[in-house]
Structures are given as structure tokens and as C-alpha cells.
Length: 198
Figure 1: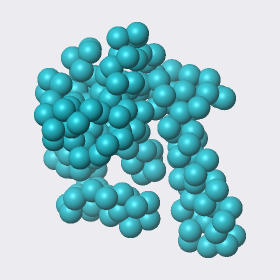
Figure 2 (figure 1 turned 90 degrees about the vertical axis):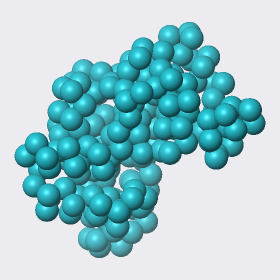
Figure 3 (figure 1 turned 30 degrees about the horizontal axis):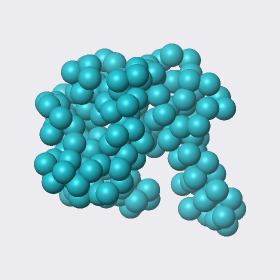
Figure 4 (figure 1 turned 135 degrees about the horizontal axis):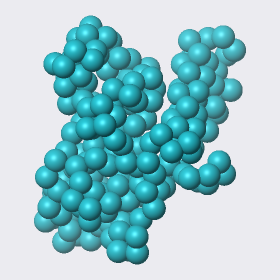
């Protein structure tokens, strides 16, 4: 299954990437651009890491915000390293996928109306992930509603949200309900995640 940055970010922050991998069937595929292949390559994950570092430096040393953003930076760095070591697969888009992803960054009015997309701009990571998922007939994990709408409109079938993954982990005993709820609320209160209520 292909996951975009929204969902891998959430599970990295909670230090539950292994739970995500388990719930996705034992493997996790990230589109190139969501994650880089080398240290210096721009990616959405690297941008998250830098954002947390900037927020950490702006917060009073030792404060709750400082610690929260330090932990966020460390968690994202760990995920980036796992990608670079090959523990999480990063796939390079082929020419067809690249062209498709590029065409969806600014979806046409016709495509927005046909698919029910509300945003006039879509993220490059979401577009790359959708292109890989649709072209290779794979499931798609994201928390972005417009990304879900586009994926389904293009024929995608299997989609999951962060909350789906957590509830599945509880159902199968990987996490207690208390752990999962606490982690989910932490994403919402500490990291600005706008997921639905449990």
C-alpha cells in the first residue's frame, strides 16, 4: 500500500511506524518526493523535520513546546533514516506516473467537479502517491480528503485513514484502546492534526 506524508508523519510522531507497516500488510511504499533516497534530497518528510526544528528553536528552551517539536524532529529524522536504509521502500515514479502527478497539482475545473475536489491546488506528495497507487493498482493511505476523492475518482479502491489504522490495531491487540486514543488525541492537540473524533 502507498502512504502519503500525512499518514506516515502521524505514525512517525507516535513512534508507531511498525504498527502502520503491520496494518498495511507488512510493507509500506512511499513515493519519491514524500521521502528522498539520499540525505540531501528535498522531500516532504525533510520539510516537516525542518519545520519542527524551526519551531523548536523559536520556543523557550525546555518548555513543553520545545520538547514537543524536538521529539517531532527526532521522529521524522528516524523515519527518513529508515527510508534511506531500505527498511521502508521509496519508489521513483515512472514517466507516466510523473506526468499524471504533475497534471493533478492544479486540477482542472472539470476534474474538480467530476471528482468532488474542493482545493484548487493539491500537494505534490499526494499527487505522486496517488499516481503510484492508481497506476500500480495499490491501496492508498492518506488523511487528505481531496486526495481520497481524486484516488477514488481515478478508480482507486482501497483507502484508509489514520483513525482506521489505529482502530484496526486496537481490534487486533497491537495497541490498547487507551494507548491508541491517547496517541490520536496527542496528534490532534500537540501537532494540529485535524482528524475526526474517535
